[in-house]
Length: 149
Image (cartoon, rainbow, N blue to C red):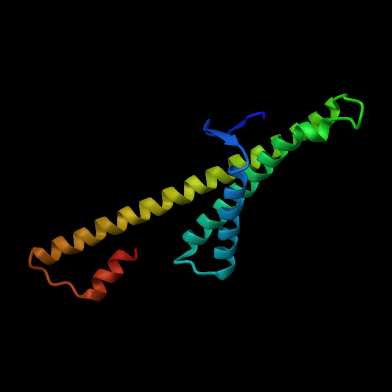
């Protein structure tokens, strides 16, 4: 059995096998269900899940096309190989890789925004706690307003 590997745009190597694709399909289905159930904390959370879904969809398309090259390029019964068909598939993979790279950037950007938002919220909460500890009275509503900024 041949062993296929796929290189991500960020130079991570993944083995394309019978476990990887079903695992990603389950993750994709879970994300679709999450997105359709509309249970998001905020807009950023929705954007992150949508970006992850785009990434996984593009990734699955690439993996499936890579796996199918051998069978789609064999000419029936002749034992010959259709190099033109292979070039078409490789062009399709190239387009899917561009989508994968774009989706990867979106996921990274959303994750960065999430962590910077959490970090700023923690800093503001720590500042509110320090102000209270210093003897300045703060109401719970003032603290809540501060952390939502």
